[in-house]
Image (cartoon, rainbow, N blue to C red; front, top):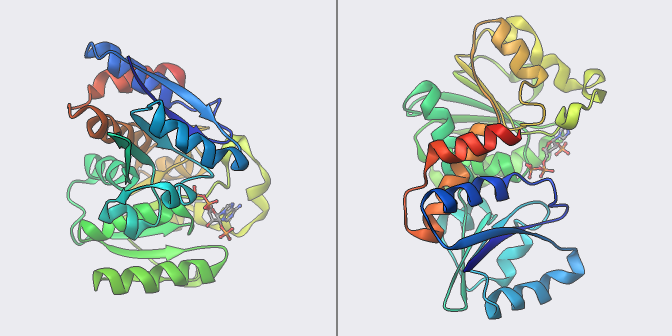
Length: 276
Ligand code: ATR
């Protein structure tokens, strides 16, 4: 039986096991997906075990998406440019790194609004998720604006990606946030029902007169599913894209990389919805 699993810390509450195990079962694949909750000092030893055991594939989540890259034999171009790996494939003890987050976000977005070509996308946040989403949007020909609490981090992404894509990406301040087609929150401001964001700058994005400018609003937070941003966006008639969509589609792409088979999307969607 082939072994797969999520490498993260903490990892116990990950939804990846229910998604992938449901998919393996549906397609009659003799494989099992588990949880590898590892601390920083255990990482090197764990990677050796992955090569030797072997573990056929990993999902990689916080805080290891960048650090894992040091341990891999080959990294595909998108993951290199994004600077993060969320998927590892073990082929004959050689470890290959991929990034499927940007594919997940592009699919979630296009499902709601169609082609991203020429769309104006405003991304809030400048962490690893923002980098993956910006990469996907730029690949698809969108114009990207990026806004972050710590502006220097957004500036760095904008400079780097503008050079990489010879394309339109600008770091902006709150006052410069104008109109656009799609607004995406990648920050953890309201994760797990946190209420502290109400006193912060991010609260100003939730004003109706501002949100009404957008066709669609996506939040990558899926706990809660209806975030304060999506509640406000839905009230002014925007299309809303909940955080489970990117999670679902990045997992489908991982499944394909590991098995070579198209993921049973509806099976995975159902498993995810039952566990959200
Ligand atoms: P991820 O890898 O999921 O993107 P991350 O790298 O920790 O996570 O990035 C989180 C992002 O959310 C950061 O851009 C952070 O802003 P700072 O760079 O200023 O730290 C942003 N963020 C988190 N909480 C926030 C809040 N309450 N208001 C605004 N931005 C917030």
